[in-house]
Image (cartoon, rainbow, N blue to C red; front, side):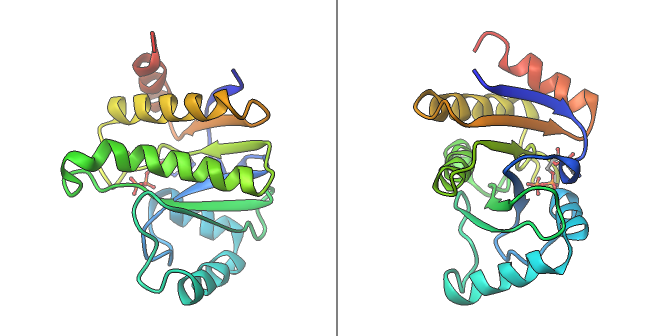
Length: 173
Ligand code: ADP
């Protein structure tokens, strides 16, 4: 199974696409979103603005995904997805987080990407419990890859502690 788990900075990753844990405005923000826009430069924001104007005037709904240029980043594309805000998603939190992973992978597939790097969507400011998020991320990805074995997926964490939480959470799945 081509799934890798790493610690590092997603903006330094070399792959076909990285996934951005964006907010629905697509106008940038803190955390990994801010890091991606800073490192990629203004082209990414320009592309996001165009998407807002043409496709999603009210913002990108939670669980959906769209791709843009990656600007100065070493990858070809940034896939922006919106994870659920824990505490505001009721009994749909898990489904919405799974949708964010699945729709990002579908977008990567449509771009003919064979390598995708994910951050831990929703587990920062959006407050999703890390263990639960890990299980959803892993199972959704594994299910998708079962029918798309040509795609390699990396989960990247900002700290060894977070990558250990992920590894522990998916043990035995
Ligand atoms: P969300 O709003 O979806 O919760 P955040 O950006 O607040 O998104 O956090 C998502 C995860 O991304 C957190 O686990 C955070 O530690 C991690 N993160 C922040 N910056 C980076 C980065 N440069 N590379 C990889 N992961 C990052």
